[in-house]
Amino acid sequence: MSDTAAWIDAFWDDHIVPTITDYIRIPNKSPAFDPDWEANGHMERVLQMALAWVEEHALPGQTVTVGRLPGRTPLILVDVPGQGEGSVLMYGHLDKQPEFVGWREGLGPWEPVMSDDGKLYGRGGADDGYALFASYAALHALQRRGTPHARAVILIEFCEESGSGDLDAYFEHFADVIGTPDLVVALDSGAGNYEQLWSTTSLRGMASGILRVDVLDEGVHSGDASGIVPDSFRVARRLLDRIEDAATGEVTVPACHVDIPSDRVEQAGRAADFLGDAVWQRFPWAGPTKPISTDRVTAILARTWRPSVTVTGADGLPATGSAGNVLRTHTSLKLSVRLPPTCDSEPALAAIAAALEGDAPHDAKVTFQRHDTANGWEAPALAPWLASALDAVSERWYGKPAVHMGEGGTIPFMGMLSDAFPDAQFVITGVLGPNSNAHGPNEFLHVPYAKKLTGCVADLLALHAEHLA
Image (tube, rainbow, N blue to C red; front, side, top):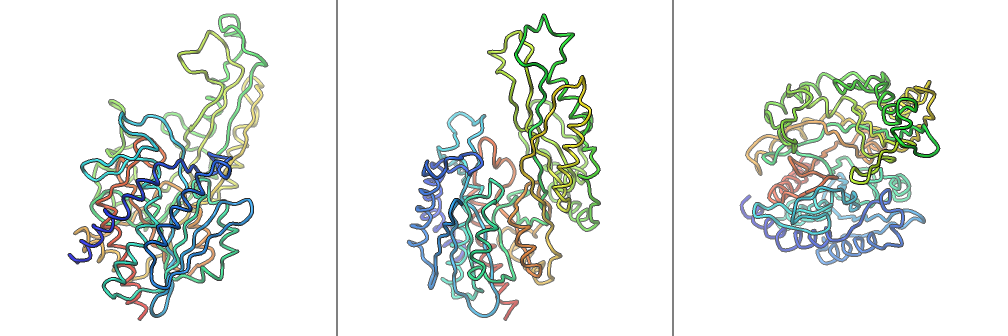
């Protein structure tokens, strides 16, 4: 244990942290946020950087395949021979979210900064730049000590933050290379704390669109028109009341709800016992702001199994410093609706659109432009060997048992794999713990936690091979 931990620690410090630091500097935004990604060349730079690192730290017998289907983002597949039966698919991605605003002084999305307590700040390090390198380190750790593992296929995509729209095509194209894994390990999820291993049992789905309200063809003096011409923001606010209770945040569209399985409620209760008030205290609250609910289990289920609406962007609203006395022509709001893991996203989005577009207040011109949908995911029941293994590796590396909890985000790849490999077991985990803030400002990779997670993955692969022997 101590020898392996020391080796992982040194490998991270010498070979992974410097590479992730360089990776953070590259603004490799996902295609949804950089339509000219191919011409801009950032994705190709990251691809070549990853391939050079993979070659430098090659695993014995590895085969590296680069997918380049026309008009699609690239893909990296690394096939590593194993011993005995079975196959493991290890997943990560190398595309990023955009910059966002609000980074603290001295920090920035493309300026990596390592803090004294081992947090590497910058966009993409935790989501999900570390996954390829941690997967390699785990396999190297096993081979270094002569511990058997099953065949491993490492799949790294470049379109996850855009909904993995290219993955189905690659999945079909490389079906023979990927094979039929009996275990999937994905390092692109969250952690409730930095004190133990967290296993993601479900992921919410998502539906999004742009609500636009037009009331005028050109802006007019607000003193002249207000009181006669309805304000477009007020109309939009009334329309939002059709899909969400403004007082409680509860989504009122029946198609967006499901019954929560009793075992997921029980798991939420166990997670709440470990987390305590950190369930909500981990967020960067402004002033005296309070959570919607201070009941720990209710809060966990609200972010994992219940729908919610967030306004993520707006058009038609000038900055306050340049806002004149003008009644504006329109208001546009980008809506992101998170859906329960087992909710069908297409009917849910259709029901949302129907609620927003029908019978507009004051007969205002209202449109709802539908954008993306993605179904959520629920993990199959854990096999007894895997449940024991997760507890064992967490105890070994962190000194505490593993915790199982749903996450509020969406990883479309999980649903694809569940459909393709219904008999596979899934271990979905990651480093996105308290305040790591993926997608927002001040994102960081908690390097000490990631090192121990690498050890957990290595030992998990060893126990998987032992189970199959």
